[in-house]
Length: 117
Image (cartoon, rainbow, N blue to C red; front, side, top):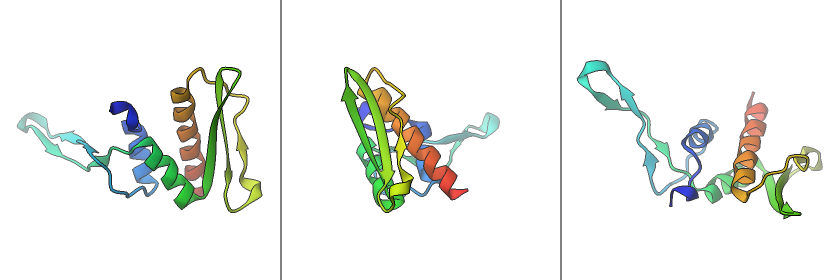
C-alpha cells in the first residue's frame, strides 16, 4: 500500500503549494522538544499519486503524459489553457514507470513553484 502514496518530501511540497484535499491518512510530523519528549507538529497528508496528478491538472492546468517507448519510460506535459506551456522530457529516460512518475512529479512541482515566485 505504501507505493500508492507520494513520498513524504513530495507531500510536504504539494501542501506548501496549496494541496488541501481529503486524504486517507497523514504523516505524523513530530517536533522534538528536548528531554521532555515530543510534541505534535503540523500534519502532512499522505497523498495518493493519482490525487497529486489530478490536483495539478485541475488547479494548475497542467496535463502530463507518462509513456513507454523501446522499454524505457518518458514523460511530457502541457498547460491545458495555452499551447505555450509545453514541456518535453523525452531526452530523459527512466528504466521503470515508478522512476518516471517520481521525476515527473518533481518536474511539476518545480514548474508550479516557479510560477508562484
